[in-house]
Length: 295
Image 1 (cartoon, rainbow, N blue to C red):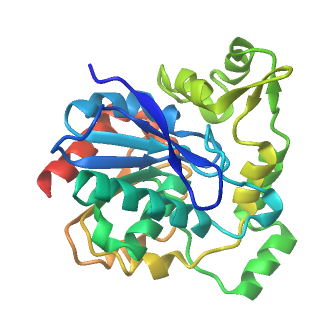
Image 2 (image 1 turned 120 degrees about the vertical axis):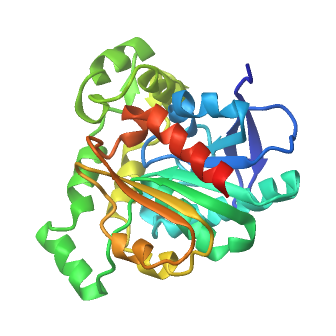
């Protein structure tokens, strides 16, 4: 069985990007990078990705401010999710050079948007996309956006308040697991995902362990300025699969994807919530395999 490893990629902004790789060396197989959701980390998706390592070269990063990545992440300087997109472009430039081929991008939630951004900006580096309920919202003008924030109708504001209050310090991983298991966002997760999230998302601290993604950074992501998602979607040229949740989907701008003419699959997944990868990993794996091997 291929083993997961971890190494660091030097980054222009000082610090490093932590990256999980399920293989040793370089093969001639297709290369897939998976980008995680806000507040999570690359290792969270280990139960989803490990079985795919028999077919593909698999990578998953810890985005800025998450996991073991040490690139600067100051909440007051969060200017929008394009910062993640530019980080991802730097990463896939490295991977494309290393492997000598285009990279497949997959992502969940914020990671889905990040993958769309990178693919739109650098189509020369991206073979295709598999998106699991990405955060894609219709564009609104700056005045409408500001009114929504001031009146509390900006959906991210409530999520930001919850994130900012999240407990950051835990005496040990067992206490954290008992607190999370079966509750809130974790209620529908299949076995293995919570353990993987904790392995990648808790760092040693003086008083035990701390969340690798600081609550205020997670909150800053939810409050971040609105980006014109349609602008990036319209520029996609590669094949893609878009899977959205039946319940509580964060993909609210499907029309832009539907208007694209390239090979595509767009599906609302019956019974799935926003945490589709953790609820239906076997289904999602099959979709990843189908997309990559079809193209």
